Amino acid sequence: MEIKIDTKSIDRLSEAMGRYARIMPVTQANAALRKAARPMLQRAKMEAPVSAEGEYTPLNKKGRSANAYRKGGSTRRDLRLKAVPPKAGEVGRVLVGVSKKSNSVGWRTVFITKGTEQRKTRKGYNRGLNKPNDFLTKAYKGTILLVSETFKKEYREAFVKWAKSNLPQDKYQ
Image 1 (cartoon, rainbow, N blue to C red):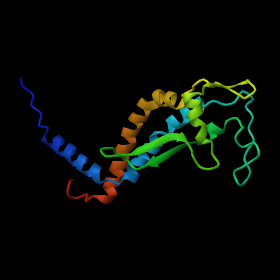
Image 2 (tube, helix red, strand yellow):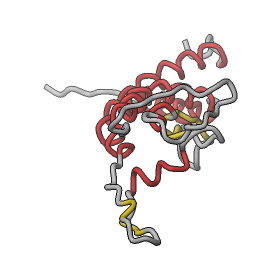
Image 3 (cartoon, rainbow, N blue to C red):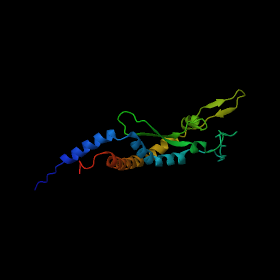
Image 4 (cartoon, rainbow, N blue to C red):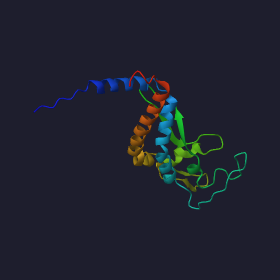
């Protein structure tokens, strides 16, 4: 007994999905990607180092204080998800990282992730030597599978919702 399966309709559907996926707005894909990347942001916040003292003083209304760059938890607090334009061949692009706004601490993230070398002052005192703590890579490796699976699901749902409101329905039913 032979079983034959006709896959022509599935092939046509796959081709149509590919065609329509290219015309679906990038904002829809980025919205799905932002939603899917939230676990990665949460993991990065958990992995971000905090000073041993654990001191935390909120900033004033202008976003500044006399001790603005010495507070523990500043890097953790300034972690963000940012949607950026995708490169060629990409559906969407979202960055998980530390905000680089003027009142944020994004400028020093490289010192945390790459570490610093031992240096001496003019008087000969040792300063520096921070061991590298690449918390962003740890967060990426720990959650990338979950994010990719969640994105596939979210993207399918966003595509169906977008297609129902933007594509002619009676033609394909």
